[in-house]
Image (cartoon, rainbow, N blue to C red):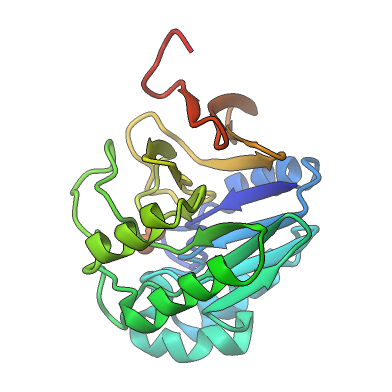
Length: 255
Ligand SMILES: [Fe+2]
Ligand SMILES: [Fe+2]
């Protein structure tokens, strides 16, 4: 199964949205043959209805099945009421042949930080125990600080409890966004993966605009980062979740 993991599109009529890079990104994305395209939030910048309309139009250029959770920017200015109208449910379990995908809204209206809460923790557990497929969890914020992203704030308020549920249940993959940089790290038997920003001008240093391609085979997860401007791809992580073996080029230059 192949998941295109994209994040932080930031459609707006101000300085955030880079339409030129978006067009480039979509051209690449439409050729990667992803089974699903998971968008980990921040489709807009201020949660305004004009931005939601713009985002919905721009997403029509993407071919394939979109699965979307909201980000903190989408919840601004009562945008949290618009999200379900435009993009459907915010918390869900989708069952595919290979995986259960648990999508969660981690944001709170008009706040930059997030929280999952007990209800969503229960949804994670329901996803895990539904069948014997592997579980993948996706939400906007992060559970540990993300390096190279500026201020290291906005870890969800209940990161400890969330991480505990994830690690105890050996969830192999968690997909996140928000910090506008690609990153991944294995903790215990879980791979935490961040997607960089797809089309926002607020990139960090030389990281540019990126998205991830995640290939899930029987026992292996491979994360490849696509640099949109340079049209280059770099295999970042290979994780054998049966054996627990993980090669992470982000940290291991010999890998
Ligand atoms: Fe963002
Ligand atoms: Fe965000």
